[in-house]
Amino acid sequence: MTETLHSAFVELAAKSPDATAVHSEAGLLSYGELDRRSRELAEELTAAGAGPGVPVGICVERTPDLLVGILAALRSGACYLPLDPNYPADRLTFMVEDSGTRLLLTTPASRAGCPPGPTVLVLDGEAVSTEPGAKPVPVVPEDTAYVIYTSGSTGRPKGVAVRHSGCVAMLAAMDRVLEGCDLSGVAAAASVCFDMSVMEIFNALCRGGAVVLVESAVHLPESRYADRITHLNVVPSVMNGLLDAGALPPNLRTVVFGGEALRRKLVDRTYRETGVTRVFNAYGPTEGTVFCSFGLVPEDSAEEPTIGPPTEGALVYVLDEQRRPVPTGTPGELYLGGAGVAHGYLNRPETTAERFLADPFQPGGRMYRTGDVVEFTEGGELRFLGRTDHQVKLRGYRIELEEVEARLTGCPEVREAAAAVRGNRLVGYVVPAGDGPAPDGPRLDAALQGAVTARLAAELPDYLVPATLVVLPALPLGPGGKLDRNALPEPPAAEAGGPLTAPGTPTEIALSEIWGQLLDLEPSGIDVQAAFYDLGGDSLLLIRLARLMTRRFDRRVRVPDLFSFRDIASLARWLDEDEGATPEVVQSARRRAGARRAALRARPAGDRPATDS
Image (cartoon, rainbow, N blue to C red; front, top):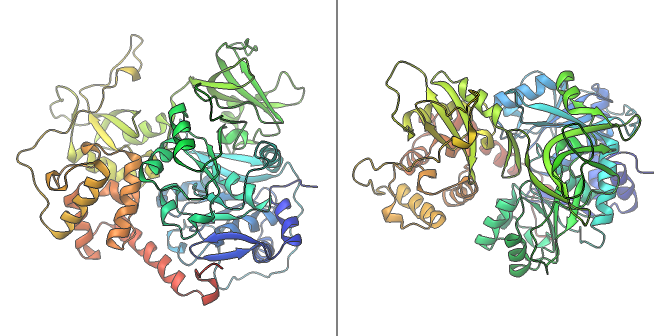
């Protein structure tokens, strides 16, 4: 009987050990090999103190070792805490300390970026000073499977502790909805710090399919196994970019949208321009275990997509302010009950009590208050209408604007701050600190932008760093003296600062060609001192820019690097100058990228990427 997130994988590995479980740039891995390596590592983790309720940090790049580590943590009885090696060190340190993590799995390539404190076990060949052979403690359905940190309205991220039973219920519901869909190549493109990754990995490995590991959805065209991908989970805004670039895998047949509002125009385009035969739209907060509603979006319809009907086993309530059910077609707040409701927020009893409530409709049950406003349609599906608070979604990531605002006001250059999403970019609004003259109206300030962005980029994941900073004389207030978010202005256009500074050096010319390609501009007419966002760029184009620069210059370029160097002139200097002259954050990024490449080159030939027969 399947009772845990990983038990179906263990059963399948015993039946079909030679079947391919993982495709990645670092090589292939069979079910049997993944089973053996994760079992042996689980024994080492148990000997080191892993067990039920013990978080095991997973700070591993996107190689098969990532899946080995996740499965080993689960098989040891522990829960896994995903730690993206590309996150700022301060963010990773906070997550480790806040969760009480004492054990951490990593690889030689990512070890340098791991936060201090936990006992570190290194995958990929380095000796581990523990005694293998310890028998893991059996896992029960109510144990915690993983902890994922989400943006927090208090300015601190909060860890959501998700149960095995919720994961099993989610996978069972997906079985029925996705019946007949080809899972032989499920793209694993979401960050492990985003709960979509749970469905990508385990929907494949617990159903006999294969995981195709890619850096992100934007990197799909670069995957040597792109033609193996049949199933893709993706954010609508990213899908638009992939369609624009003609970059979807040729054998893709199923697309699951989630994380943002889905429009009929994109659905029609997906069916029309690709070989996709099934488009689904899904919804669910981390606190409800990935998805709680999921539905097929038909091809022959003119109606805007809903977020689907509730998944089987999910208890969905649409309630008024007195927590009474509202009639069909009437807006109300969405509450979730059933097996998918998480334990709560790790070490946050007060916040847990505010959001996780007794279920008045199920004696002894619990329900989660989502803050989302929805309505039931006559057909029993859910239509998303908005939020009751200031939470937003950008590229599928959940952002509490209060967290961004708290970080902004923590900068010594800022007295007051607000944040909002405009198009595909996060915009910060600040009132400068100090005694200088206040601006007459909204304006951009490159010096302030550089100072504040550098500080935030060292503390926050890139999706939480405002792409544009608007300086205001004062924040707009409503009649009650509270911030009037609707009155926050659109970012002003960058002012011409004199004659155009045209590309001059070979690197500037190469960069201007890439920018021109992305922004549909004539390369010779691009001012090398103009910021990417000011020329019409957005967060999705920024991801593509990082990918294209990596390919063009044969150097790993990450989105955080593009926050540090915002125009062609500074980017060109960074690319051309010696490592010793670069900021420490960039030196660190280069060292990690070099270590990853060296680790891959040092692997035995059998573990390196090879021609797939």
